[in-house]
Length: 125
Image (cartoon, rainbow, N blue to C red; front, side, top):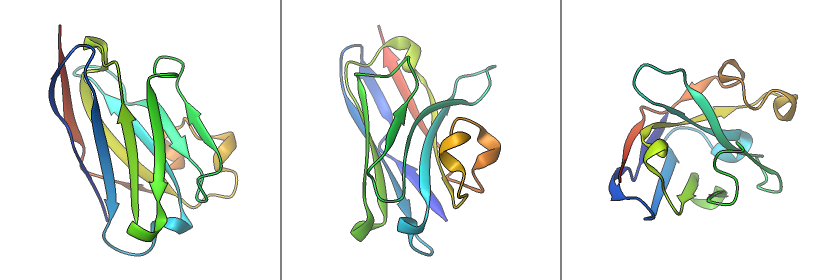
């Protein structure tokens, strides 16, 4: 079970840190992804991190502004979001996968078997 938290309302240029905690099992077994979904739009890939934390990936739209990290001892994955823009407003979801070929299909929502409930991020202009 995954639970995302840390969302909120922030002005453009501000920062937020999202957390995704695993309450069952050990998330160190899984590679993790962050996705977001704005009203009326598809759920889009934002960032991902390998089970060890040694590999990270980002959507072009957030590269240089967002940082994904993990603390396996705490069963938690983080998404640090800096220099937020109004277009970053969305519900953010964390997801987990145990697929061995994960890196090749990391942006596909169907790669991930487990999903958190989402946390709302709203960036005002």
